[in-house]
Length: 145
Image (cartoon, rainbow, N blue to C red; front, side, top):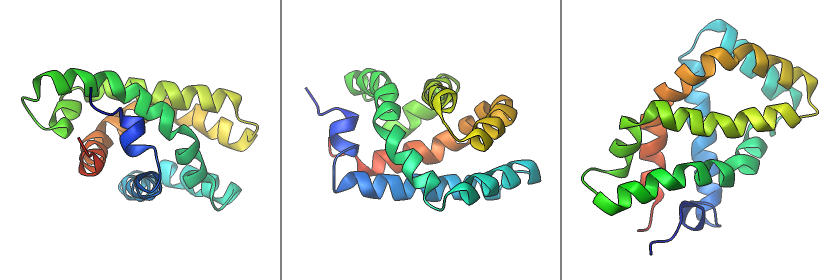
């Protein structure tokens, strides 16, 4: 059986590259959004300089775990690239990824971040769906199998 996504993407030295690439992807995506999201993101980054990379690092294994069933289904057929497979299922994948973020937001002690996430959650799925093609391509570029 092929190595899991956590084994391929969640271990050093690849993990550090995936985290950096994900943070850069988030930064790029936010730059393309409206003022409200840009302001919220700026506030979150202002809470703590390394907040975004630390959150990506903390949630990476869970996110990869949510992608694992998609990876396994894709691995059986391999009729397209993994990125294309994930992109074709971006609505479901976005919900899977956001379930991790929702759980994290519920537990955070950062009240400002929690409040901002609550306000932005309704638009989050649309934003995540829009980012899925770039995210899937990024992850696929790091796969070893």
